[in-house]
Amino acid sequence: MALRYLAAAIQTAFEPPTHRDQIGSRVDRMCHMVEQTIAGYQPFGDVRLLVFPEFAHVVPIHEDVGRLLADLAVEIPNDYIDQYVQLCQAHGCWIQTGTFLERDPQCPDVVFNTSVLVGPKGVESIYRKVNPWIPHEVHASPHDLDPTGDHFPVADTEIGRIGCAICYDWLFPEVTRQLAFNGAEVLCRVSAYMDPWGATPPMDWWTLFNRARAAENRCYVVASNQAATMKQFPPFSWPGASMVVDYDGRILAQAEAGPGERVVVASIDIEALREDRLRRLGHDTLAHHRPEAYSYSQNSGRMGPAQHPISTTSLRDRIKKAKGQS
Image (cartoon, rainbow, N blue to C red; front, side):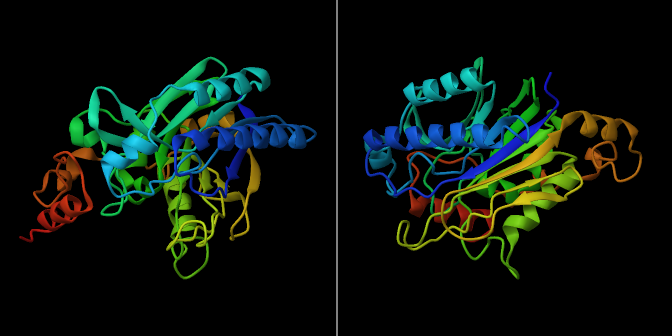
């Protein structure tokens, strides 16, 4: 098993496609970026894990579920995933894809925001964003369809146990906590985290939450952020600042904040992480967890499952209901 290796957070800055037919050119570019990264860093070590940002394939340019399904959504697995698998087989690496807008024949009236972990053996896990950025995003959460299901897969791979969460998910500590208790050692953050909540003080939430989730869960974090300009995605701009953080919350590598394609690479040492988890008695927030002490998740003020189809209006109504407003 390759327990010591390099991980790369690769940020993209594509124009938003208007149709799924344009996804292929983006996949070709990302595959080329993978090959360049592996070759370029080969003198320094083996890049085995590569993480891309949210909206790398498509952007939810419509607020209507029907139009997203008609123009942009794709089923998973698909031919693009096959390209990534072939790349992983050729280089012995794992790729956490940028997100797809996913359509599922079993759920014909919803669209999911989905990232896939791909390795040499094929698809390792499929993660659907549990906390869409509401009220803007009209994607469904898997919680909407199966409120009590386990929506946090962890893949047991040759390079460690890998989990994923997408962008806004990281503002909910329960998400990465569940991944950690499901066995995750490396957490991939696939994000389109926009200004002003980026890497620049005083609102540097991007850096804050990446470091906090790493430390509180005793996990490595490989976080890739979208790096497009406001001209590409009005009215938002994304600052990139992709980063790798160790299990004590130390920043191992980080891209400079600003738009544009960038790659940051840092060492992952799964053996050291496992030894530390076994040895540590203090600040062991997993072993010290007292689940019986917390009842807040059962309180009435919470976001219930959606009724479909989802719209920005229905999302605003659900938010008001969760706040106890009429």
